[in-house]
Image (cartoon, rainbow, N blue to C red; front, side, top):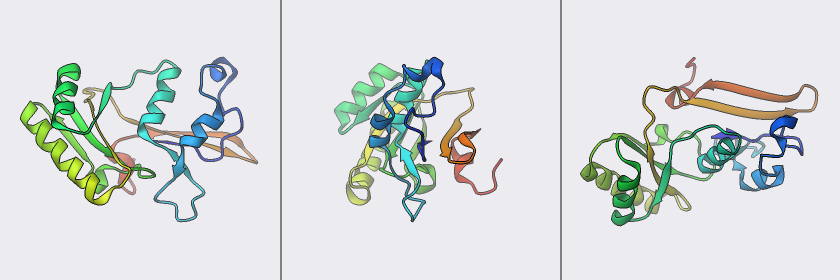
Length: 173
């Protein structure tokens, strides 16, 4: 997920990409308070909105589809191929793996359908408003975490770090 924080009205974008990005207010409206911040001061864009913003500036992100049923899974597998990853996206929750909301390395239809059933049931019982997605599993590339914050004294700050489960482990580097 991309942390929205206190971005300036221009979204913190440089002039070369400023006009390509969605207006800041459109991104900020999609941001929700981070579940990890009890004060509600940290805003988080969901994975889908974050990836859409990255695509706008020309970065490739894995193709994905939302799934609600076995038919949706079969259509997603047909269009995406294997290997796949499946995720339960929850409003305000960026650390999905730590909560058991990620299934990696799906390589056959049967396992994809079973994992979708598991995540859909988990969503229905524990994560109101959640969305189950299935997406291409990127192999041989690094996952990254991008955080953006607008500080009154220092200006725009960007954090770039190892992503995936490395973000979720305290003390990981």
